[in-house]
Length: 124
Image (cartoon, rainbow, N blue to C red; front, side):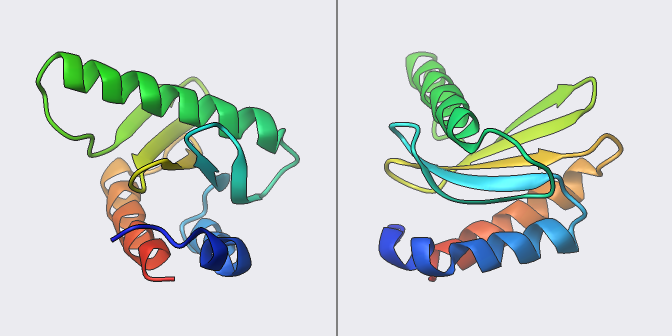
């Protein structure tokens, strides 16, 4: 099922706000493959344009790596940094979901919550 960008733009912020708040995350963004923000919600002031471009770039690179190495379709990308995690999921052709999670976040819980969010976003 493809993402309906118009519905996502209209209803997506409320869905992301609920997801971030309920799971005690730092934020989430949906961006185009070109790196343009579609919708986002963050608990602090971050450069949304820069994050959209960065998440799209990482997704493209990893998908290329998976393709070149015959490892199949992307499930999710989890990056652990000194101050927390980045999680990236493809929402289908040309759309990426990026999530910022704090240090101490349980990754299994985060992955399950992201899978549920993906289903919700695709049903908008």
